[in-house]
Image 1: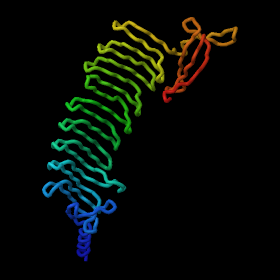
Image 2: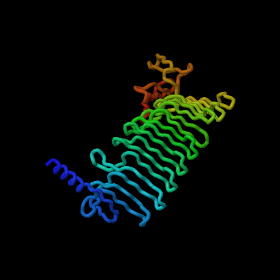
Image 3: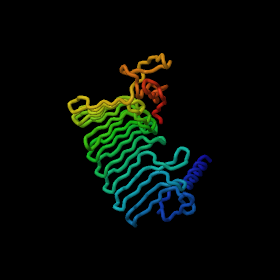
Image 4: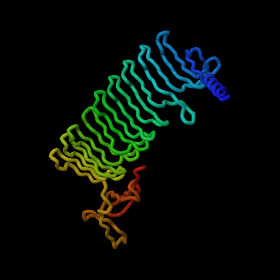
Length: 313
């Protein structure tokens, strides 16, 4: 009795999931399901460019592409191969495991690997066989991306946190300049450095929420411009001569604590002194946070207006 039950189960299983190999032209689609002889296909479907030139070979289960997939170019070169499978909730078909794609010349074009419904890495190559880009993922989120020129030299290095730029980013230009930018959660925040191949610095700034010092250099490494800003607003700018001496020094705003407050007994009001004279111009002071500050306008030592400036504006 037990043998009869087992035999019946095996026959039933094979009848449901019997593997057919058909030409795609012999089947038909209905609501995105491939049918063969009025039954959803469980097996392999292929198509040809001609009788002797195969175009595609794909596995199907219950009429939907599920399993091995291969495509070829007309010249017979394999174009791509991989495994198609459903998401865990069967909502859509995606690549799973190792997927590869080739150029017509036979060189690898693209490669990716997935596991447990998460992308592990992906790579792209130039048609000459040199690696163009490599992206590494952690728990399905982009962690690191590296790119190369077609001669194999490094082009760019990027690091990510939760799919947003984070940390030091490195960019190499064909003219020999190397750019280093620091990001925090997708925002440029920290040091921004530009160097030549010989390590000569031509630009250097350390800005936090738009606040800090910016220095620009000539190709000999001598400073030519120096700027100070707060939340993206320029405070001062120095321009230097070739011999290193100051050519011009423009002060657009000063720190508010540089003023000396005095009391005018005639007007019974406070007035503010800078360099022994009543101050006329702009000052800035720290705000409630590092993303904003207060700007105050003075005329003849008296405050005439105040405003809050935010890096978010």
